[in-house]
Amino acid sequence: MALALTGCKPGQPPNSVSGSIVVDETRVASRYGGRVEKVFAQEGDGLTGGQLVAEISAAELRARRDQAAAQLAEAEAGPRKEEIAAAKADWESLTAQEILANSERQRAAELFAEKTISPIEHERAVTGAQSAQQAVAAAKARYDLLLAGTRPERLAQIRAQLAELDAHLAEMKIAAPTNCVLEVLSIKVGDVLAPNQSIATLLLTNHIWVRVFVPEPWLGYLKLGDAVKVRVDAFPDKEFTGVVEQVAREAEFTPRNVQTVGERVKQVFGVKVKLDNSEGQLRAGMAADVVFPAVPK
Image 1 (cartoon, helix red, strand yellow):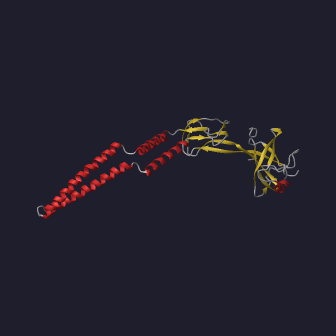
Image 2 (cartoon, rainbow, N blue to C red):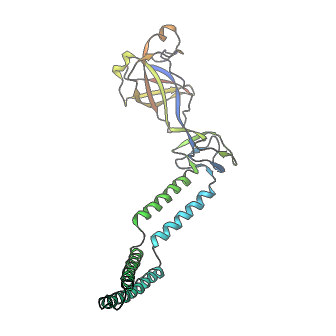
Image 3 (cartoon, rainbow, N blue to C red):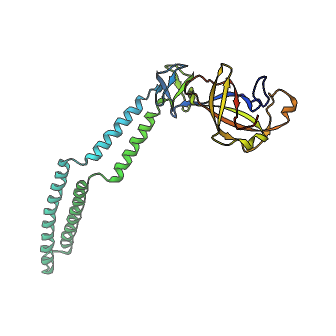
């Protein structure tokens, strides 16, 4: 980033300072690695927000995503009616066996009281009835479980897995975050990328600005939101508009690229001016003179 000049150029108004235009930039990448499958833009292309820059192959992810989607569909559908009917039949069959086992136990108790059967035979009948009762309870629980369907917690778990895979797949498509210009394209089709490896550098042309440095006496005349005028050498007869976006809270020494040693020892405050580039004529690196109308000449 080039820094501003606090000195005045010949013919420059005394209430102006010079600096260089800067455009914010961002480097886009995927959080996951893979092979570059498609490239949709080239260096110098203007991109709109959401426009694809490149796509990385992820065949195994799509297979896992399809598997998770099938599991979710199965869980949401719940058990088949045939499974429910079979569980009900098992329960009813074991209930009938329990009735028979209870009858045998009652009969064995009477015979044991008459000393007709041995204690072992009586105990066998009692144990058989108890086992039949437990089997009926287990069959009833299985039947009720099938009627209730899939647990909500299980559905939530599968949906979370599916959302994770969708997010992973979305990372395979690298898109412009906003309106911008593709400055540097660092990949080509067939490249294998590591996770978080930059694929392109984008210039965010919707936020173009210039930082200048003003002397301390000017601070009393500046406030956030003030309109300023900006001139560039490429368009000497045209004035661009800007807005004071930030004023530094701490002073610093004048940058070393000012004209004289005397000026370098002065303390100044950095001022960030956002520019109106709706016509797309301003570019990063242009020298700009910023005129502050509120500052006395």
